[in-house]
Amino acid sequence: MQLTMLGVGSSAGTPMIGCQCSTCISTDKRNHRTRCSSAITLDNGKVILIDTGPDLRQQALRERLMNVDAVLYTHTHADHLHGIDDLRAYCQRQRCQIPLYGSPDAMRHIADKFGYTLREAGDFWDLPILKVNPVISSFSLFEQTITPIPIKHGHSDIYGYRIGNLVYLTDVSAVPASSMEFLNDVDVLLLDCLRITPHYTHVNLEQSLALASQIGAKATYLIHMTHDLEYAELSAQLPANVFVGYDGLKIKI
Image (tube, rainbow, N blue to C red; front, side, top):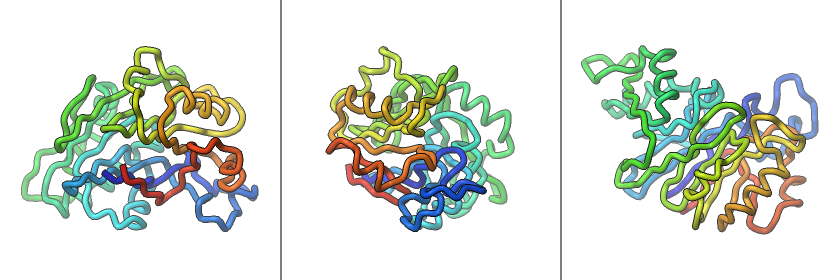
């Protein structure tokens, strides 16, 4: 499979509105971060999105993302959900309903707030045509085993995901001991790293590196970063197997 980092930014994105810090005014495109999301392209051509942030349209145009066949939701905060309406273009192109997967709470939230998208296919394609699928354990999708990984996001219970030897953990403040069993023998880990100073709903740089060391993936990529973290400066201080993610980065797995 191939993973494309659609966005590695935090909820405010980088550059942040009104900010003139060195990261926000940087000419290094790796410091330009849209809201956090990734696309996984399988060998059979199927594309699975992880989250639909508010920058989905911009990301899809930039990456020439021609099809979306399913979406995995980590949680339903605005920066991970509110691009859901842009799935309409894929429903129109593909003439099919797109399945959504996530925790029962996440699926209920989508049904409550975006109920207009939950429809069966018919003669009209002017709205998204989506279907919620609550999951609490591993399931099969396009001949891949998808494993939701319960993690903490402050006081909230959300999901990370494992697909083969790829693990995606965004917006994580802690990984329960019961979830560590899903994190053995990982080749590629995408891991939350909000900023330098502590935060009550995200791991900071120090905590992220400690968690990366504990998981021991062959390669770890830092995601969901604020403007506190400048690409070149951060890259220079990381261990050999830890890398700074950036919008558009593609990884073969």
